Amino acid sequence: KQEVTQIPAALSVPEGENLVLNCSFTDSAIYNLQWFRQDPGKGLTSLLLIQSSQREQTSGRLNASLDKSSGRSTLYIAASQPGDSATYLCAVRYGNKLVFGAGTILRVKS
Amino acid sequence: SQTIHQWPATLVQPVGSPLSLECTVEGTSNPNLYWYRQAAGRGLQLLFYSVGIGQISSEVPQNLSASRPQDRQFILSSKKLLLSDSGFYLCAWSGHFNSPLHFGNGTRLTVT
Image (cartoon, rainbow over all chains, first blue to last red; front, side):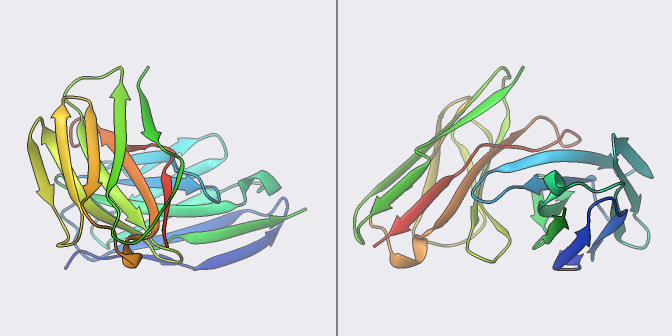
């Protein structure tokens, strides 16, 4: 069964701190892995997409890495800001389907 | 640029009533289309996906159905809603398998 797990489930940090969100998946035969952000009551916004052949992707203060053989990805957020507060979800694509983790709820305190 | 529209944003329906949620994509052709449901405190559950007009794959046996009458239109329906159908419904699209998935703003459905 293809499962995606995100740790921690929730995280609270002071503003300015660097932080890491973790995502693990059981089936390594992936097409790609995508990180999303979801604000309360809203849809999902795509942050980064890593193809199965890539090791990492960067966008501004965000850096995502992928270790397909070990079934892991991390999302690194540098110099966190209160506006980063949201739920972060990772999703793994297997063919036509994406399997989502349950998300990490991030709160950045000012 | 591509955009995805989903409506309505919120909906309150009585048990036993029908449902129709619509999603349209602009700025692309032959997209893969998806319906997801997000229950409170839970992850996203894939309900249906479509790789072309009239081609619908169902992931979860349930009280819902989907249709794709046009290339960029995806409709989620029910003949009789159940209380358990309450949730946040999200439409999404992608290009080929290596392209990212893009979501609409979602519909909050409450069945009373």
